[in-house]
Image (cartoon, rainbow, N blue to C red; front, side, top):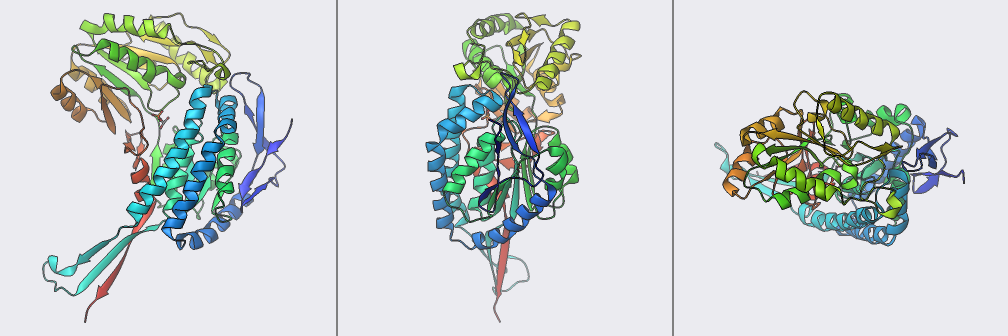
Length: 478
Ligand code: G3H
């Protein structure tokens, strides 16, 4: 109806003084669905000032009270799961059922963070001096965790709610203020989620959500002197942010090219089920999706047949109908995926299905006999297209995995736990899953990438710790 969603600052919903808006294109209809405010740099400055002031008081609010606010927000978030999920369907074409799951998972994440926070942050440390050579027992060092200040959270389009709360909740429980810059696709779902925090009654200015064009406020936010920590999930932009950001803690989760190594003794039904789930859920638009299958030649034909049979059962269509494969987020993304497919075609990959695309909707595709000279062997399609590379040994698989510039997760399928452990040790990735597809969750597990896949470690406990610093007080006896 032409209404522009307001941004959130100082505990209120506001229109930007820019008078401009950013429109959000529905990936399915490819027409504008929603509009959000195009905030100005001046508005960002005001948000930062308010955050700083609110944080001072929040840090002194008892930990159990901070936890209570979060529990309240979690409950409200779950109550609002349907309208938020509806936005996810319209903005990012997430299948309806998965959209509801994302919101419920987010509520659980917020509650768990509140519980974990009271335990972790409720503990400090006492050191005495006489353990270090030359010292008497005359100094007592008390240390505890204190907040960093203002945390800037930048989540990606594929989990605009869950990957926002995975930054918001740890920041808040630890006593920080939080500024959220949601992705454009997913901004309205994020604003709805922020409304739940608003209803929970957090102090004014402590949480804000600014929307707008990256070209106008992107660098301005990430290089803002008022920001004391950045938690970012997304693509290459994260590398640019890391180079420009000041001397502040960074938590970055960027791309991945998660390998699935299949050995000769693997359970091929389990392999096929995990390749289909890992490769094609949310149309491959997950940083932890299986992005290359490295399979022993001797079992490759049998496994590929099983994967093809399962793929034939995937439903393809609009997210409202809960289809397994839905349109990818944007036309440019679909074009990029198509470019990888055409490159593989030209270089002689075997197409297990016919390539088909209508608008942003790309039919699931398995490419067999992919070779290292094809772009798809190395690049991340972020779409429902998966390459299979046949290998002659486990070492060859590990070698391909480690030659990637990414190192997020990987997985290995075998019935031999000794081999699995050796391969896990050899794979240069943040996590290796044995006999299951890569995944970030459960959300309290550590989650980290090596190389271009990121900096730092996430997961609830790690994020809480990362968003604090150690403060010591030393008592000196006469
Ligand atoms: O897209 C990146 C997410 O961190 C992946 O999360 O494994 O729960 O899909 P997920």
